[in-house]
Image (cartoon, rainbow, N blue to C red):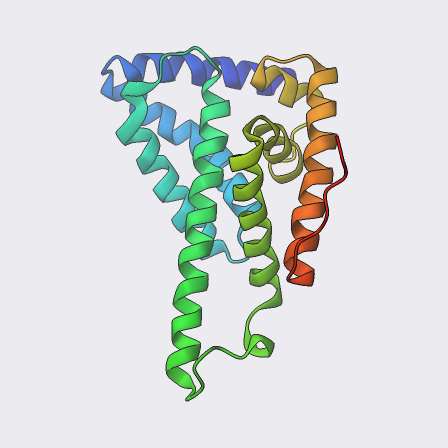
Length: 197
């Protein structure tokens, strides 16, 4: 844990230098951030090649947008968000590509759901539910992603988001309940009544 904090502080320092135009700092930042980004992408994507592709896209996003990093929050918080978004986009792209391939291979108008990947389907459902949750209650998504998809401890999530650990636990609890409802809607194909607040 202490090593992670030191590594995070080092990344913050490199990110600030890279944001001010230091090319060497940017190269070091990308090199040191790569294992974290790949780990996030690997948790969300089934195949190593897809995770590598998403990782590369995420690092490219970091390089292109590093000048916008002002150091008001931890670099790793932004990094996890970029990595998660990149993995989501990669998964969507591959699912769309696979659906087109299935359509081209058959004479029916739509792909037979029995021939599509159950794992890819459930991952896409998860990403769609995260998108909906983000549009309705954006503050619940970062803690949930950092805890359940990135595997950080509650304390690490609290440190990354600069929030009290009690707030983090409450948001993760609420996010999990919302995700159950959203995923339940997808499974039944209908709407699920929400509990009154």
